[in-house]
Length: 225
Image (cartoon, rainbow, N blue to C red; front, side, top):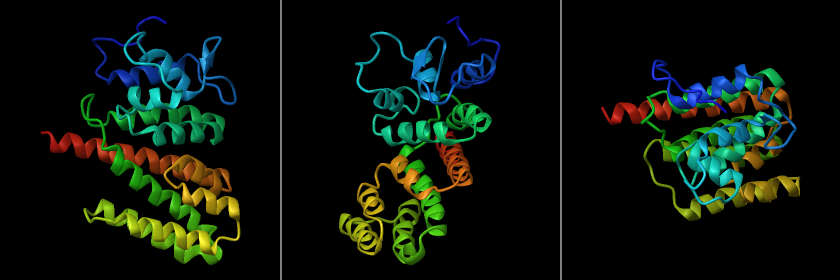
């Protein structure tokens, strides 16, 4: 692909790349990572961000964590990114691709967000969706949500409290599969698929994820000025 960045374009490189993918109609749902000039959101980003020999090839999600989110521990974000792209309405998914790039670079190219804080903000949004469908598990969902809020407010949460919150949900869930997802709640993408029952739920989670990325990118930029 020709160089899609320009020294005269003030937009961050990631945004330029994403906008090129959109304008060139390269984004497609339900297909391969990248084939025949088109691919999913993650596949298109990796095609243009990965430089041969720059990184040891691992999995696509691990590469995406390093290259898109610039955080080797943000594989959860790459999985959520793909999960949302594939489940959003087609045009919303295409716009989501560009919105991720804009949010990540909201504070400028060098102001990557704190992805741990993005994780907690996103989980709160996912749990808000879960609450609407929680029924008798609502108290357990609310309890888990409160732990994420405490982390964001600067408080500490012990491992025992995390374990107890997960256990409370598992004990009240009428669905063994959902309980299993809760036990592995670190996979926010997988958990989102369990709790989101409508297209509107996925749209809400996508908007919250974008907002979390933008909020934390701007916070990082402000902290470094």
